[in-house]
Length: 158
Image 1: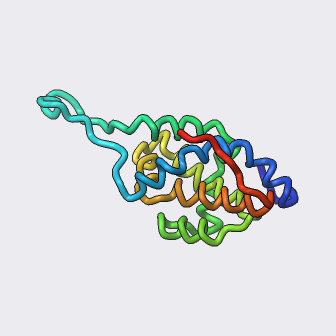
Image 2: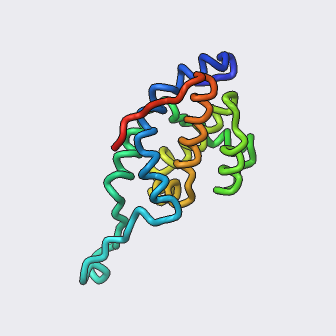
């Protein structure tokens, strides 16, 4: 959905409930930032008989599954990357850091790149954690919602 015509308060209301569901992963995301959350399954002898494949932490898979069912998912996320000239994690983190409530659609585009894009390039799921994209993004969304709500947003713990 385009949020260009919504007021700041309406933007908060549009994303708030889905954001609160995802905030419970903040502690886990912070603890895993900069670390690998996947490994390559390669039991003895597998290399000679088949192709090794990645194995992801269960919490990451739960996070991705829950995130993929939120309003943050935008199938047109490639337009955010084109319009904002995002080339990699440094550009994404800079946009996240400087985002305002009016940039929630752009934040959703970055989120979608890692979650939806990960459906075909699964390395994106773990890169979102390793580069700290998910953590930075959810932290910024929480900050923006709290600013516009004027109160702290409570979220369930894992």
